[in-house]
Image (cartoon, rainbow, N blue to C red; front, side, top):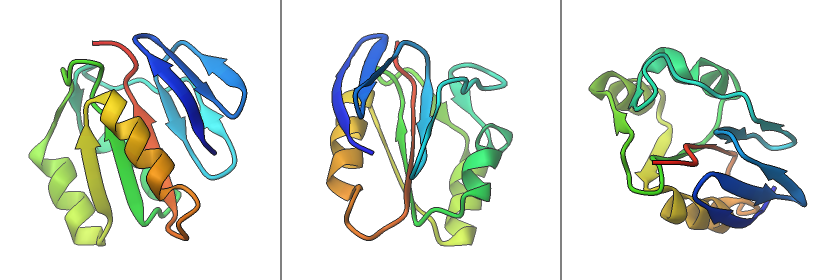
Length: 114
């Protein structure tokens, strides 16, 4: 799945427009992603992603990079051997498109605002 465009609060993926935070899997988009603490990513917030067994997780931390990542998330991904890329959502969209189709299984979670 390719990201066509992103702007604050809006993203277009494979011809569909979303206005809420999303998780992009191989064959579908989950547009109901919400975290226990909105701007602080914890392991329980990515359980569905972990169940997909990706090689790479790309995280968009918001237009201005407001979302923070807990050390527990970083440790969990490292222990599973999952490559973890996190950056502001503009950069995360670029990274998703670069990795998508590379042969690596990528799951991308994007915070669309702040």
